[in-house]
Amino acid sequence: MSLAYRLQKLLRETTLAGHVLYNDVAAADTTSIVAANNLANKAQTIAAQPDVPRNLVITVVDTTPGITAGLVTIVGVNACGQTVTEIHDCAAGAGTYTGSVAFATITSITTSNFTALGGAGDETIAVGVGLKLGLPVDILASVYKTCVAGANEAVGTVSLPYGTIITTTAPDNSRDFDIWYTYYLGHPMA
Image (cartoon, rainbow, N blue to C red; front, side, top):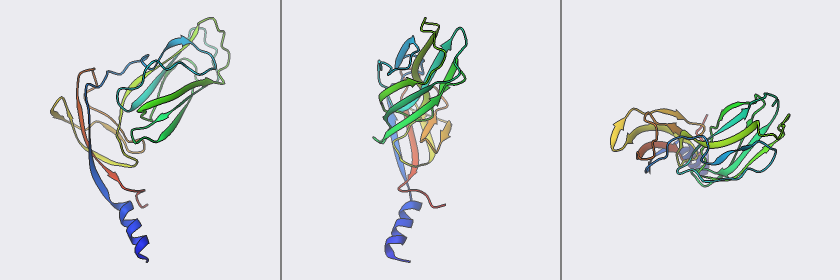
């Protein structure tokens, strides 16, 4: 086994510790990113950016149900500065679609392929921020400690594939979140 291979294997199996502090994290909402507007196949107007890297929540309203197809494509940058895309299939029509990807900034939100749009305002879309906070890592290994407003609390729901956490205490526009985690330098060995 070559030295280069052994070094590469060691790096892939090594975890490091990291920490992030998010101050005054905004409460989850339904309209801070895209205000409620008539649903049409178009580029949506982005009203604001997330306060910290976090997932997005899409709300589709259809008062005279008829939507049987439609996509919402979100393009942006994650907590590591990498370009990411998330596509939501909204074929179920009216409802809430909760994203998994944490966006630090949003480049575009586009609605496409929606069917049965009357254009009379009975179908609307809005986008806000969710409860999943993104961590600045490529490959999250674990979250081992969280503090909210300076107090320790139980670690909430962690998604290793997406590098996110839903903290036990929800953001409320004033709480600070300290999160300690481990991450891989490279893809872990299978």
